[in-house]
Length: 279
Image (cartoon, rainbow, N blue to C red):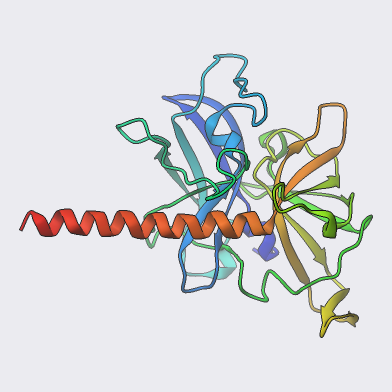
């Protein structure tokens, strides 16, 4: 199957309370490099089942919040040409037996950031296609100004293009990226996004030519190579009457990913200490 790599990177997720399906959304994998820790990234409100600002329960039918998440990964067939043909459904609990959540929040912003990470134990049956934070594959240092096109790649209303492949919704950058504040690292886009796209990666996709920074200056490259810049995670519209949407900046993803790596190492060390003390 001939699909673009960003299409393959968006993952369909479902939130459950017991056996009851409450909602669906989007997630993706992130890693710093090919050799470093890899984690699942999505919105905090997807796993809490509550409005990020008001804490209101999002499920109006059952008034329930999720206790498990189902992730539809690409099945690892060891044949890149078959990506997008088969999926591996993985169900994970969201809470430990003591009631503490499995997900990891931003190390400084905490619950204020609508971004979380989940650590997974990887098997050979799952194909991992993360967005890389420290690689020129997903970050080519594009110069992006207001009114330039951006794409939100996810599952509006749970709809897929085929199988569990996402839909591309394309809109425009609605502000200067230089205005992003460290204490509130969010920027606005103008895009007709809808429920189910929460947790979608947001990228600037350039199939022909592109402007990029080099040596402190903006250069234009005319090329037949497709490039893209990973910019952040879509978090929902500012209100139901507007097509303005919020995107948490890529630096937040990096911070949450690194916190997930530290959490993984801490728990691994603690488990090893317990094992050694039992000997």
